Image (cartoon, rainbow, N blue to C red; front, side, top):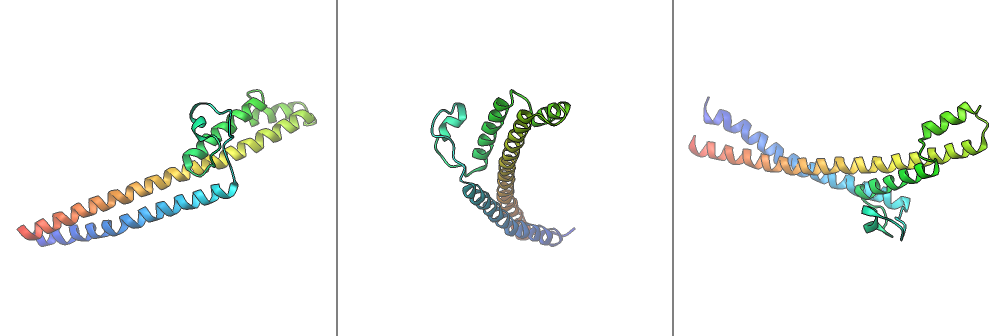
Length: 161
């Protein structure tokens, strides 16, 4: 196989990667901006006091990033468990059904658990989307590096061919 037969597909792959990499990175950053815009629109802010652990550093700050959304979701999860006595929505719902569905206290508790879990799930979706954008940005950068290496290899083949 001649050097030209190897060089042309190598250069084509390199060019495609060098072009695709920045497109992926831009799409990743656009995705992050969309996530931040959606979170900003929700107006979620960490409480100004009383937080412990990793949440303490976020006191009074708005939730604008995936990691912040995950941290806030963890807080919601803890609050739901505290409100339900450590029971999940499914457990409270099963108790309500076992009681014939007519227990007002369990009905309210089930609604609290449901609302909390839905908020938590929404925030965890924002976190997961943030993680995907991180992957897309990283893969975009990797494509540029690998594409540049392929282009350099094709140039070397052309020079020695």
